[in-house]
Image (cartoon, rainbow, N blue to C red; front, top):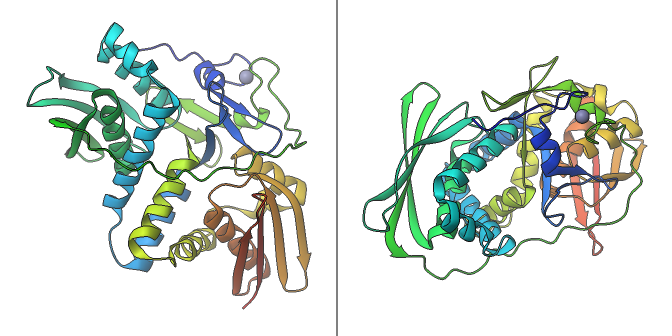
Length: 354
Ligand SMILES: [Zn+2]
């Protein structure tokens, strides 16, 4: 197994620290691709929001999640790392690349994933099987796997999975002989990138926010847990989740952003988050920045209303649902929410009494 040594000061794996940078403007980016944003978020938030959307719509959305994630991963590997991955695969073969990527996945909280078997003879019957336990998301991971091999082999990929024991999966990418059909690029939503002045206390050794020491990385299981609450965290690109939302919107209609906001509101109302991170504007600002969700530059509590002004936001419907849920939890009353994505990329959210 690739060594995943922790920082001697804060305990975060050095690999994780090398790959990610927390900026002062409320965003997290990949160190090597500063245009590629990341979020660091409670896994329950992601899965409950997907579940909430399924409940509200009354249909399963797994297929759409897999497809959106596949296209987003394909775009990322194919366009943001032009030639690099393919050149490395040609040079050292695909196994070390898979080992490297699964090791990275483990420090990002994706679960214990490793190569089980593969056949890659560039003919009919090629496949790659990954074994996984405590996987962060079966549909998101399936999309990742398909998109990666789309980009590496330029061929169509089909995904199947078997649950070999409870919570343990074997996920297989069947690399077909059919050349990848030309596809329209996903229209990635550009993220705003305004300057900011958020001061997060830093680890003097690795430079990551000190607050990350509240989390325990367990690379041999591929999980990141809050040391007190045990909540599981995951680091992932918001662009792929934004792609899922826009795919849903394309297939199912323009009410989808509101459905996502509603799902997030329900999640908040379940009481998952204590409101201890929402005691003051500064606390909230830091809580959002730690998760890479943007820079809270304005917060107003008025009579019967709560307003947020966020620079450099991502996942806008989720943020709207978050404000909606906070308003209802704090006031103990039902509310409604409106939000506006401004021309300059800022997000304005207002929750008011229903
Ligand atoms: Zn450190």
